[in-house]
Amino acid sequence: MKILLLADEESRYYWDFFEKSKLEGIDLIISCGDLAPQFLSFLATFAKVPILYVHGNHDYCYDETPPDGCICIDDDIYVHEGVRIMGLGGSMCYNNGTYQYTEQEMVKRYKKLRRKIRKNGGVDILITHSPAYHLHDSSDLPHTGFKVFLDILDEQKPMLFAHGHVHINYGRDFKRESMYNETRVINAYEKYLIEI
Image (tube, rainbow, N blue to C red; front, side, top):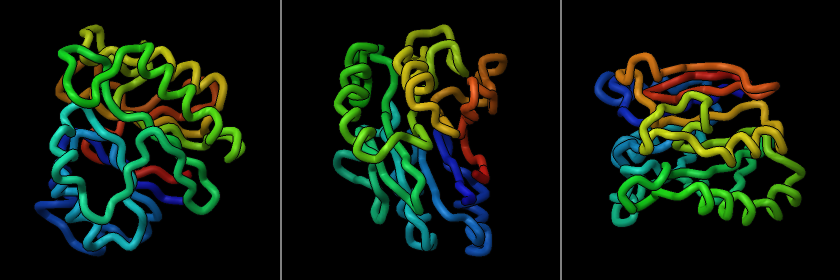
């Protein structure tokens, strides 16, 4: 399965310089948050595959203008061709904005999903906006990762964990890819094509 991961900055490759042929062979598109809903709606008009998304900390406009033709997987599990995908959007709470959570609030969100996880027999892919604590995150509060994401990786052992939120222009804090035990961890900033 070939998955196009997107986050934080609208990819000019898939918007300004768009050609339908660029979507050929892609089986699934997933946004890790903080993208203009118009960009995702644009992709949905051409893609013949599901477009899934979680909210980023700047996605408050989605309440009034959600991306057309796309599926929100925040606080849910979506199964595509047998692959179980769980979504937990948002960032660490730093100014009480929409889609910002304390560590305790994120733990509660995960606990509410445990029944769905059991019903589906586990999780293959974890999609978030923020990274996990000390795994691709930064030291400032807005970009600190959630510790509960490490618990999810330890308990569910997904094959893939994709997030956004930490941008490439942050310099030394940016890490595109790494491994956490058996889980491949990807920062989806702008665009990243992965095959699983």
